[in-house]
Image 1 (cartoon, rainbow, N blue to C red):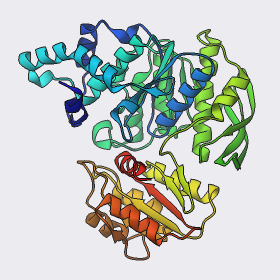
Image 2: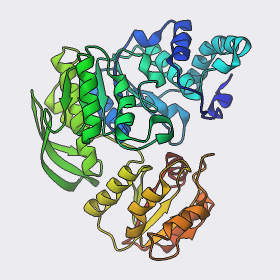
Image 3: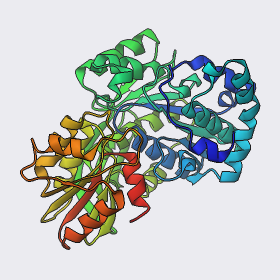
Image 4: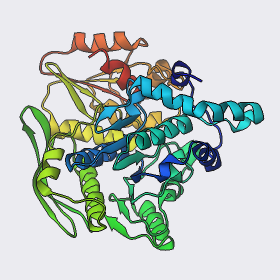
Length: 430
């Protein structure tokens, strides 16, 4: 097992089972038990919330690990310490720490081989222990209950908005999906939840009671006031105020586009206040506000170019596409909207296209570069139900971008969306 082989290791559909992860971690000395951590799940916003929390912890002077997924361009993006991603040299070294275990399992029982995500998670645990981080922020890969990150005992569990995604794995109802997400809640460990729909909130509240875990809610314990869409020092973003049960944060500027990011920020600040209340960290309002003013979330309604305006995003669910559409309308001025979109075949293609196609002046359907990608021609058949013209089908990703730039005038907006895979490939070209 080497670096090149791991980067080509395909996601599989093996049954989720924490036993594999626990055995692999025991083999290398259980590094995940030696560092403090924050655990984050949810359907929408968990990546952004993870980044915001890690950015603030770093600004507070803590050596902070961050584990997120998926990556945009480089696999090493998934694990960072103080915003610097792991080196390939260190990555290979840690792969080799796991190699004897993987070799043994391969000979003994190949059906119990660790999955791609389990191996990457194990490398993150080893890396954060090697770097002696003060605290790490760990984003769940999928679900929560049986996710490979769920062998940890965190200082706080964070749940961002729950909606429909990965329904083939997590279930087809919100309460079932919420059950999987609430699986990260541990006995006696406090929980911060973003504002939720009634079904997920009911499941989360019930689980917290069963686990004797105090629940803090955005909209109840954490309030957002005085929201104003603005642009500061060349960055699009939002000004607002957050009030928690123990503090008031005034004059915040977050250089991220969309009201949903304000809600993610409120969830993050709530988590930090819990950590401070429990004596795990010391907070400082000035440092927190300074950290928020510098936050960067790649490919989350990220402005790549000003003329023409090019926005890169990874929305791949119905709810996230709706948020993207509303955020574009609220935050940007433009004459024509050109949408370049590629989707995975296992997503709600009809629902996603319904949210974005009707506002597009030009719609370009392309591939994502993902083995599970949807066929652009099939997407076009669906898109015609909601789009007033014939959509353009350009299968080559590079050519799709070139065409969008060719037809765009200086006052137009190009929005690239639908997939982390597509965003990663096009980010390299922009």
